[in-house]
Amino acid sequence: MRAQDQGQPFSHRCRVYYEDTDAGGVVYYVNYLKFMERARSEWLRALGVVQSQLAQENILFVVHSLDTRYLAPARLDDALQVSAEVLELNRASLIFRQQVRRVADDVLLCEGRVTVACVRADSFRPRAIPAAVQAAIAAGSLPAGE
Image (cartoon, rainbow, N blue to C red):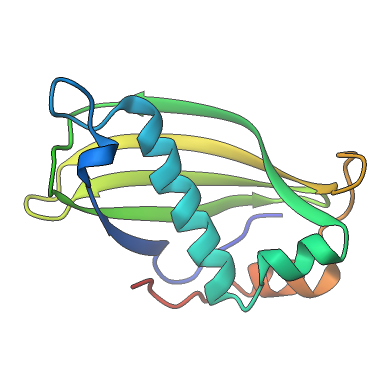
């Protein structure tokens, strides 16, 4: 099922801290994945989905696979805009298109395609995304992030 056909992708703003950088003073590559994770988490929160509550119900969302391209470096104190757009909504998984842009000049720094699976917390076996979460995602009208 194609999701989020209406409106803009969800967007979350964050800043590069000293801990995010490497010895060269640029964002260490793995930290872009953390920025993307935060955007997806805030997207869920904007939908009214509380991940800690899902975990109590034996439900987790986990990254299954990703394909990431690094295009330009971010540096200490840069403000970043991280988007999360649902490309596919399946019974037990979601495929996201995500981008990390520098706010000052709107340069695309990193982009990725991330597959997230819904699993049982006790066994990590796939399970269907709860109907209420499916419905919220399929509605496709997500508010902008902070």
